[in-house]
Image (cartoon, rainbow, N blue to C red; front, side, top):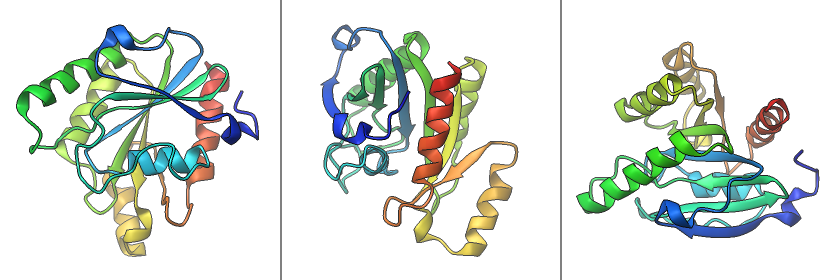
Length: 193
């Protein structure tokens, strides 16, 4: 499925605010979700081997639409708006929440949701709530620690203990650590489904 030269095939497909504007259900989709400013856009750029395909911002709450990226024929990455950002108007937060829930619950092309957790903050109550929701809804998920280069090796060992039974990967878009492993995990998921 993901061919070795897929980076040259990657392109931004569209950003949508309303479900009626989602692309047709076809192929397979991998969604990326996490708290605001957790590094979703940076991770997508690293996975797609592109520097600026997904817009990166230091301001939390910048991703305000569901963004679809065509990775190659039949495979899309989906950047979901982050959760947990209080400075966005409540009406906008509610719209994001409703649209994201509708996406993960109804999108038949969804193969995996990657939950990103900032390794400097560890798993928070909202992350646990989201992972429990996905598990109860029988939606495949992968926990992914980001910004792993920003913590000590002692803190890395604690991440493993804190994650407990949750299978998790660790990445750094700065050093590239873990990106290949995540890409391999995605490939294996796509081949299974």
